[in-house]
Length: 188
Image (cartoon, rainbow, N blue to C red; front, side, top):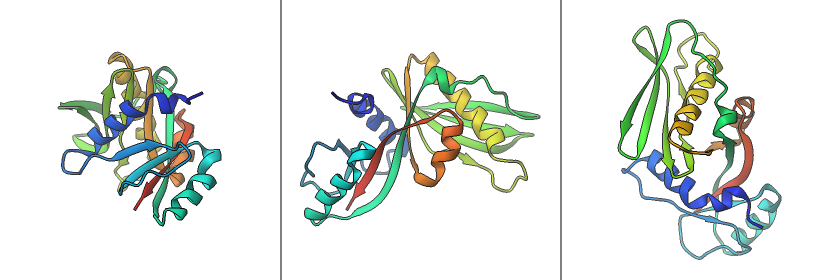
C-alpha cells in the first residue's frame, strides 16, 4: 500500500520545482521501487526504513548520493496554529505565477520569507529564511510564518503541505507541527 507522500508525489514534486524557479531545470523525482532507474540526476525518495537498501542499490549502479534530506509533511489544519507575529511585524504576500512569496516585515525591514506553491490538494513550502542580524530567536517570526502559510494553503483548498529540508533543520520544523514522511536522496 502506497504512503500518502507517494500518492502525492507528482503534485509535491511539481510544487518543489515551482518553488525552485524557472532558472533551474526540473528535477526527476521518483519513488524508490526496489531499483535505481538509469537516468542521471535523479532525486530518489524512499521510506526511512528503506534508506540502507536504496543506498546499496545506488552504490551498485556506481552512482553517488550527493545529498540526503528529509521530506516533511503536515495537514494544513495542524500546521495552521493561529500564531501571531511579534511586535510590529506583519506578513505580506505576492503571487508570482505558480508560486506565492510570503515576507515578514518589521518597521519596513524584511525579517523572514518563504515561498508556497499549491498543486490541487497539495501545497509545497520552500525554504524558510530569517534575518540572522537580529537578536531575536528566529522561531518568533518563522513559526507564525509557517502557520500563516498553512492557512493560505488551506484557503486555496490544499489538504496537505510538504517541504524538503536538511536533517539539521528537522527538530525546528517538528516543533512547528511537521512530521517526517520520507528520505530524499539526490543522486549524481
